[in-house]
Image: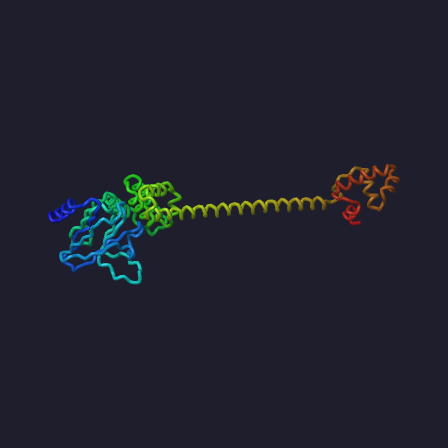
Length: 344
């Protein structure tokens, strides 16, 4: 224990302003190892792409290694140290896994020091980091593991969805209440993204949460990579939401148009049917005045208006007026239609 404390004190007091130091011990009983330092995007915690690697170094006979210099960013960024990674093959990504953990992801800057102590367990388990944001990252990861133990997975889809929703809500609340650094909040979003089927849905449920993180990233990083990466994701989600709403609006308009056209067609059909019913009504059911009945009978036997006027001792204009009333009541427009109606 005293040996570890001395190592930490030596490196803390020997720090040069604006110079980083990453050093420590990997189990010295093993053979010489290659140690890699990589810069990561926020969603690259679990795989290795060779273009991430910034530096490599070898351990000495005691297992000691060191990276130091002034070339890292003064802003908080996500880094990884790893050792004994398989040989590069066709630029393919190598996914980390298994029980023998041989890497550590951590937040770091050009002004920080991290010291790895000798250990007998997984590589890089025991370390001290001066970066305050990384301290919050450890709290986030501990809280995430605690929640996963609490909200266990279930074979019941409904229960599983409920537990995932609770997990996401708890992470979101923890992010709002307990985290200060935009990069740590961004990594909290990554934890949410691992649990939800579609981040679009969670964004639509809590847009302010994501937009606030976007603003904080912009204020701290400007237009640097983390902001750009997250901004692309948010822009993609926003565009997808707009397209969905547009498609839904378009569908509603189509449905309403169809309903309107169908209603108009139904109304026209009913009107036409009503007219036919009126026009096909039994002539005997139509109420005519006695004089109109006399004139109708004379029309049906082929009498002209002049003949009808002479026979009934009325003027031809009066016959014409009565004829018009008869046509209207029987829903015809001429003498020919009247004769057809009575099938003469």
